[in-house]
Length: 370
Image (cartoon, rainbow, N blue to C red; front, side):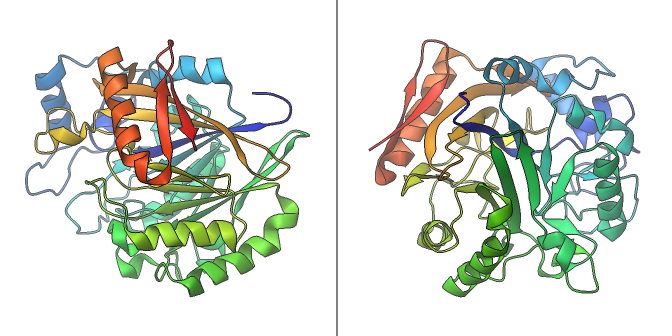
């Protein structure tokens, strides 16, 4: 990082609920309503069968593991995550099969990672209804963590987060959810009802609407990040409509970073007109250890994305990615073999966009582009 750049940490889905909540100091009632499990403790048991005993309770910083050393080494100016967990004690669950929640008393696991902003426009933030959303927002506000992408009405769900980086600039973060990620249509915020900032589609009309919003806030920010929760959980394919939408946001809406997530594994990275497009960041943390079915995608591997941006024009000057592995509900440095595997994925999937990765001696992946 130099005085001429702003470094932003971005990550994929952070799921601190269910099994992970149960190992933290103040878990909620473990009762869940899934076909295959009736207690969140079942996910702890499965993980322990796979990788050994998990100490309980752990301290709030436990889940971050080796990520904390990476934060200290790189010292990003801002830390933004997609929080795919409701922070609530509500028992009013939404009948959708899988429901994530974390106790409000465990919110310190977020502040232990010094998270600045939580994106909430996703398909789990209303798992425990509007009551759960309200408690989530209140808890994050008390913890001094900015929450965007969901709110008590449409205006608050659409409101950007303006984050200040000293004298170097300001970053505006907008968060959108797409029904393609599994967000129920009736979760959309309205003028009189709380919910998520749901995109009607990925059309040119939607791009123009976002452009109008960005135009109204551009004077208050030097860099604009558009977070989008879109697409399915598995598979590397990127639909043309996502590509066109991302390019439209950059060309017409003057967005500087398109920050896409929903996939449980890392997808291709593009640098378009000098601007960063992350089509799918993968999971940052989950409780899937020991669950079989999609091993070829290696959802146990995570990437920490550190984007260096020029505040003068929002252009990407560098992207480093730190490979980690989720084990015992904690982030560990990935082995060299796993880092090489991730490098190969980024090379293969980035080929269509003219991007590739280089593995540095310290195990970091550096993005390169034509």
